[in-house]
Image (cartoon, rainbow, N blue to C red; front, side, top):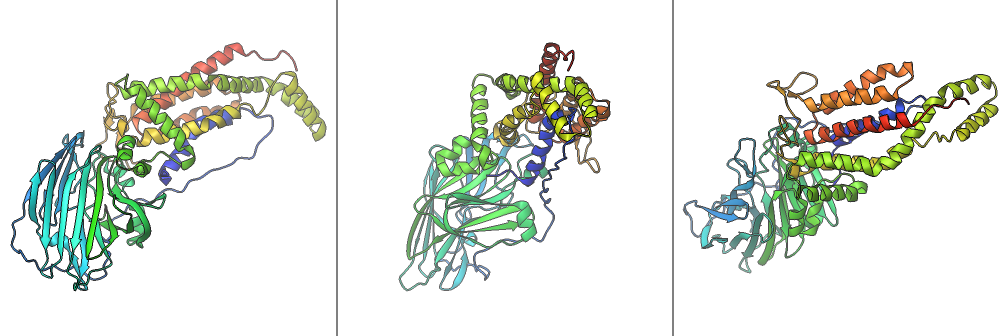
Length: 542
């Protein structure tokens, strides 16, 4: 699953930290500048709420053979969660993840207030029927299983049986629909998550950016985020073999996975301005039986894969071409965390290890660039002598490079080879749920959010900062000294001051885990440059 457009822009800006080192180096000849831009994702805006329904006509209240039943609630408890089921629609009215806390210090509640999930609708005798308006009879009850049944006046019987998933948080759901031969049913029925998901993070704006309705069509995941649904208001139904569908926030997902057969269609929708809905359509006959796994939990690779290997694609690990690297980095971080309980220390150790792994390559490149700096006076001399003879100028320049063992392109090679790692690490540190509410030390209490030393009590105009973060400032200071050691051209002196300020501005709103990594990386780079400085002497003569 690709990162959103905002992440693309942020990645390009992060890359500028490393490219800046290259740009600040004096070059033997001017090079054309190349600019890269990335479109920014549109912000969600208030719009008229649209609830997408498969039927064009409004659903009508069905006539029941057993009207006037009281609405009751039952609780199913699984490992790490508590589900509240209601006889109103035989639906899910509450779901708490006991191992994950919300900003209020209480367990994460995935169902919005007064919301109903896992509701059904179909058509009987040409009339649309919304079963969320039906009070079901409660049947068998066990600690890990509850059954419901509704009998419509025309003889149609709907049964729903809830249980617990074996290896992951969530519910198993069995649906059985039977009808007399003389009763005409629609070609499909729909199992819907029409209440959306409740925001679970302190920064709701960041959470909303990741809100999306999703479906796996064949082997590809189709993602419709909140911005897209707000802009288009209605989307056409997705037809085909549907392996699963669902709705997600930044860190949590509700996924409907049909187990007995594939779904036939999915309709994504918008409700109450910021809640995304999904409705899974399945073929309907007079004797229909289906089984579903309903995953309700964190976007965690291991948990998702236990429900269905294809469900793991929900996790955002960056662009497709870097996903193997992203998952390798995530596996390594989790492995380190098995021995080191503090993720801040894990990030520092990972940063040091990456420096050690790439040191031979980086050392060679930086040493070559240092030699290039030392050769600048000799290059200018050659350029002055042969300014009217391009052929001779090129010949003498290459001879100078060869004499002193300098490759003008070797400084870029380490950066190019490390780019995939930088992209992958960015994706991991931005999206992984393991960093959610993970403290480091002192004022850094949540590595998934910007660290805060001063709270502004609201967003600052123009920049949108809600607090002042110290890690980006420390990173900017380290970057200043790093560039101070490498910049010798007086014309580039202004960039020594402007580049760190620019990066502090960009990093101020990024998570503390990411800022911690770049801070350690910059500090280690200073050490690398000092080592190269003392071991690389300028040539005595050309």
